[in-house]
Length: 231
Image (cartoon, rainbow, N blue to C red; front, side, top):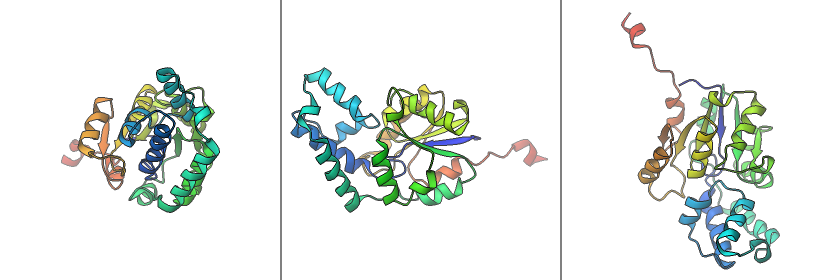
């Protein structure tokens, strides 16, 4: 397969942060009066912006989370957990080195402040700067395709020439809505059943699904022309 750029989701693809962040967010919402498990948070809200999540909760329940959650405190608590527990996705540094010939960008639903902190903790920030883009830069977060269109434009690459790497359902929806090829990733620690998650991502339109980053460079190797081999 030939692409001109790779657009990466960050949480759950580059860094193994979803179990930490989504677990923390689920506890936060539960304490604020909107009971939800980490798994259900991942399914419903992974990839969405905080503003989108708050709007959905208010539409469903009338609860205004802005009034019930101390955003400054929750960011401090999450930051501390990241500093204690966060790791890069296994094999990601080798995969990025193998694919270094391709332009790359991050297209994430997280705020830039969080992206900068977590990517620096995992030695990935310098690899992607200045092409680190948050959904805060566009009108709509995932599953809308806005952030992927934005990242492709910054790289000067047509959407149809981009490969998206995504672990979430909303992310796959967004990548396909952008007209891009999407590879689903199931290797994050927040995925309890990789086979079941792979089936879900395929049903949503993922063109390929893989479980370990070592597989990605192999998936992008050109397929030899059988006729040329025969000659």
